[in-house]
Image (cartoon, rainbow, N blue to C red; front, top):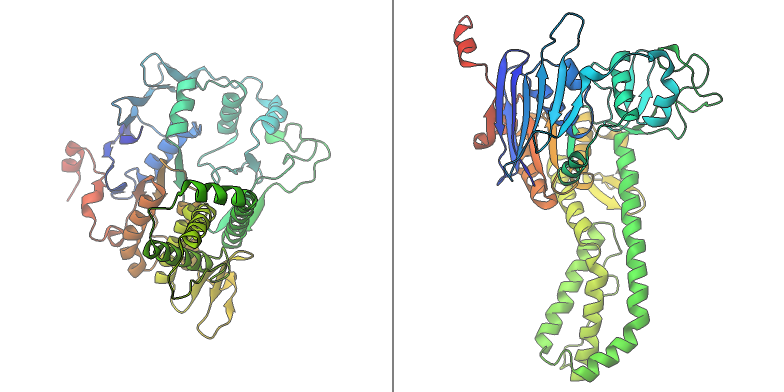
Length: 462
């Protein structure tokens, strides 16, 4: 099930936006003047799928709808207060009209001073950055407009879950990821709870006695992702070692069986040599991607006829090596695309993948450039491409807000072609909000303009 359309009516009381997604190209671009709701639309999609409902109480709208390719839809309705002092009624409905998800009007602020302990235990992804600020380790940012009341609403939703099974199913088959503009800081959730003592909880409530863990762990993103890449490479190498040990332990028995059954009787010497050549090419690719040393375990056959028994032995060997190297295939393709994209953009430096260090940048004179030596634009691009290749789930909807941030105009013009290569490899849909015609380049067929209502546009002064 894939998302096909996103629509919002009455946004800010001014706009009706309808965004059909380009499912074949897997990339859709929304553009429009400042204040027309591009970023807010992305936040509403993220909020609905990732339980960040505060956006729906903060932003005026009447109807928010997401349609799927099975003709069903997910709807959020916001009704105006019926009397003074009453908040808006906000309800979300699932694939059936009776599937009510949430009604924020039913949430009360009673007991607002004694919820801190439960919040710390139940909503560990929120971290205090100093009153009245709050930080979400899940999104890597401070939730927009999140004040004490908004945080209390989030806590109520967590303490009294009203997430039906149908929403969990939709989220499992339609993961949604919002990538914001600032990508140069990576975050890790603290091991212990953030409030350290009496009076240190939200709204001055009780904190957790004895905790001295920092409120927030921040890391420069590029070194953090280099470490993650190294760890992922070494994990796959460990898995490969286990597979190799398993195959090697059964090789004699399987070889005897293959000889007895004449498994490779239809294979000739030319096919054997081609198979061995392909294995050498695969090893070279793996070496370039940081998985192994160059030409490791290469087999060379003398330039003379190969006997049938030798052919059988080598074909069983080829079959085993294909399995051993096949475990790398998915990550190999991602690393190759990462290197191709980054080395196309970065001038005077080459990205090398090292299984111990992750990212290594080599200069023309042979010395290494520290990761801190990359420009902010280079770091933004490296982090964005890494996230899209290695962190996004297949069949996700990925939303990117203003990818032109810190990118030179020449880079912006090439960005979309490379993004489409990434979406094709990983298999996700992408919704981009941008002000830059250079990002769009020659892909105007993928764009949807966010415009004012016709009568409002006509009423605007010249």
